[in-house]
Length: 334
Image 1: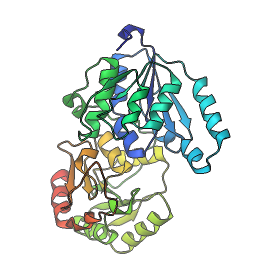
Image 2 (image 1 turned 120 degrees about the vertical axis):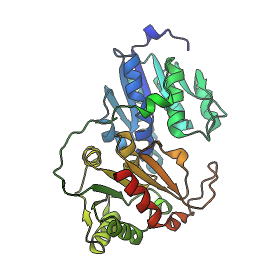
Image 3 (image 1 turned 90 degrees about the vertical axis):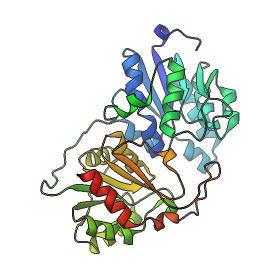
Image 4 (image 1 turned 180 degrees about the horizontal axis):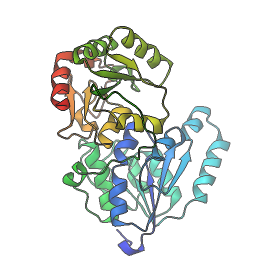
């Protein structure tokens, strides 16, 4: 690192998307602030995910970009405006790209010259390394939490080890209280995901609700998930529809749970972030994608996963038996 620690006053993090990846990256914030308490921290993020960062302790400024809109509309005027807005805030001592894609690397480079990211052998898009002044090396197959903390620790010359991560403070502030039942365990079921193949079948979720015989809240985020959530509630007397929630409300709601069960998706990762017990059900992805601990566990389907070429048509998550989940849930709820 070219700058001495004392010279770092303004830090930028580039992690544009997606929700789960942002959650798993935000763990680094508390360690940055512990070592650089007087530095300001700005996070560059896609507009759609910016709200989740409002609840992260330690982020001073959230700068939103809308590269997805540019990609969709292919408008040069939009691209020019995004560039202009990035240059307007480009006043940082160091910029850390936690994403490792060409687009995030370009964003980082627009923000300044003192950029840090993954080297060419540590990311899927090796050309991204051309935009960094300094780099970190870590196996692409390594756990994402280890990758996230490694790139930040190297950039700022600080230590973030596994024990520190295991003993982390909750990442998000709780901004809303929910009155929940006190005569039963409160369990959230995360039924949605960005890919259909990451979703556990609604029939098995209903079966699991009935087997648990606790208060099961079904989380939903769009119309399709709402209909599936209603179906589960209609087919299990122990299932209740969760209220419609904003991202910050979702964080608060999940923080009240005794257990969260769901696929490899943002809301399930929030449980880990908040030190809430969780079971992540995996089909086309592996436990590399989650923060594992004694109370945050994964159950993987029988399929073999090539992390360098993910098969989005791997629906093997449906092969996970509800009895397997039930046993793990009972252990975590003891």
